Length: 327
Ligand SMILES: [Zn+2]
Image 1 (cartoon, rainbow, N blue to C red):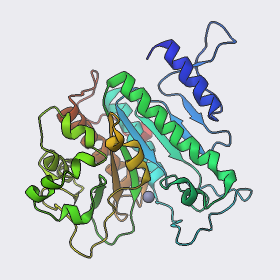
Image 2: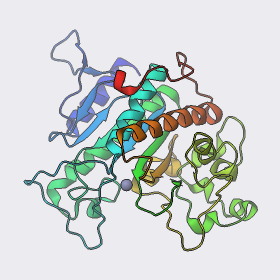
Image 3: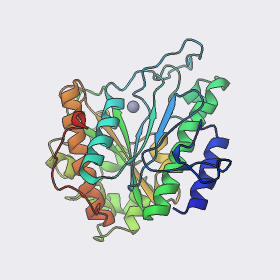
Image 4: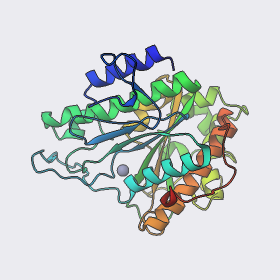
């Protein structure tokens, strides 16, 4: 990114409500400060946090926040889901730390620190805020930061991947990978699913026409190089994948939410998105399990980026050499 573009983006972020764009001190003290990878930006209240990256990987954690300031209203919409995704903020931070330890690079990371009783950043604005107008700028900050991350990745790497990290209460010990392809569509045969064109309209739409190995759209979902297959090889089986191509009729399954639909490539962008819902016991119930799962997410993301995007960090370390707690 050029300094001019970075400064313009910084000014845009400040205008959108970011507190500051920290970074190297500019020569002219009156000029906007140029943000650099590793800088942390927030909305004015500090509820939404964006760590600027320099890798083609974006992490999003909208449901892990625990802050419940009494001066901000609760969502009261009928049927609104308000449960916290336990361990997911820690997961996002562990994935980012381990990614940095292995590659020397920063993933872009957007985290909501405010509880879901106040804001659900993975919903459209009315349901997200429960109709509380005071919460709208905070919701907007989350998505402005994601837009900024997508813009930066597109500028710096042309293509990239967004992983929207979640925890599910569904009673199955398996990941649910969401691409905006429905359970009903996943239950089709490969040929029938291909005929629907659903994957080409999904949150990885761009990847279906622009992947390094010429992998077919359906194979991207549940073939041997799908994210589900890679995560399974790293100890975390999920749907869809070669062994588990679709949820059974009647089984609960999240096919992706607002963030994956809006910030993935379904609308023509160059960054693909996948939602990952993780079960709790043994995965995100203790710090040790969270770090272990985070290791698998990093390993899997690096393989996925290499195989499908042709991206390899130039200074990557080939194996885990330090735990995030040592950094
Ligand atoms: Zn969630």
